[in-house]
Length: 510
Image (cartoon, rainbow, N blue to C red):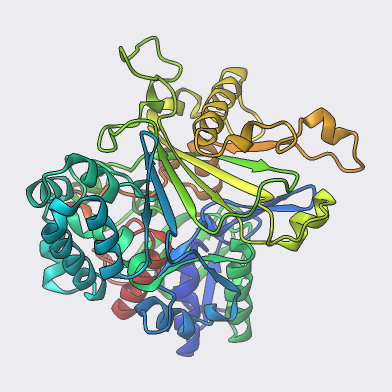
């Protein structure tokens, strides 16, 4: 039966659009190439333990905050969210000195002004702008203006203390910090909702969000079809009329929404009277953001749960490209450590399945059983293995992964020395003596990300937004084909809040 709407990809943006349109009575079909839905919200299980991939924490779920109202509407507040420490939901350590990010705009300004009293007036101006930007609708003219302002330049015009600029940029490992192009709006948005509405972890995994959405969509007559990889969008008389999958199934609809990367979306439209060569070339030339390397550590419950995230920088060079790109290279930087120089450390909120799988005696909320370490890496670092796929990687790739993982652990241990104690991270052989062996760590590279999400070379944050060319790099949900819309992190904003807001814009365009 013909659908009203077909959505390609079941990431957060696609699932939000599916739910909202199904609520309006639309017959919605979601086509997902993988065996499980979720996109960046996917979780995976090993030996009974669940691991998240893209979900770590979200900002702005306090009552009265914008995202709280949206999550209520979407039914997501039914899930168990745990508020992180208001007195330091993020701890930023730069060169051995630690600075807390605290809740509340005025609290945030006052806490930093105590450390940087000579910048008090500038900090007040900064948080006032941050608070105002957090309340702006995405279509507001001021948003467009802030997207054309370079974040690095703005910070250096407002502040004179380089260390304070580094601190304000210290939670940058959840987005790409790029001095020549990062728009001020994206920079502000990456922090504002956490300060204004609190930072929150899900007591569970991203799969819980996915299951809730799928259940709601199906209860309203929609369907989420997995193992359905679209290989062509068929255009007839200037409109998309059908999606053809690799299994030869054809799905027809009146409206199509793509939650996959725009470059791949338009490549699916093989013949078109609406997509000019110039337009295709413009999309194909857009740059993608860096990738992320993730190490998931499994402990024996001897490390206490920490209700915050840690951002650790070896040196005060946050706006310089990460030196992780030097790994595997004959080049070196004199006087500097040529390995991982920055890492984000996060742990899962208490989960009973982790304690059970490990046979731990401590309660799940008391211990950090799974700890994630994340560091940005240039896509070029793994490009030589781009033709390989999960489960079939060459030895050189595996050795580089091991090298980066060890570097991440060493840097994290500069703040958490317990990470290098053998009783905290038992060896694989020690675990093998148990009834169910569980390795100490799992790691993933941008190529892992690519294989599961289909993003070019595993870009973590989608297309790179550029303050020098905001009209070219910040895409609208609308496309030259009237009944083909876009959603997801590649448009304006990434992250749970950003993709949610973008999905709302897509639904408005329907």
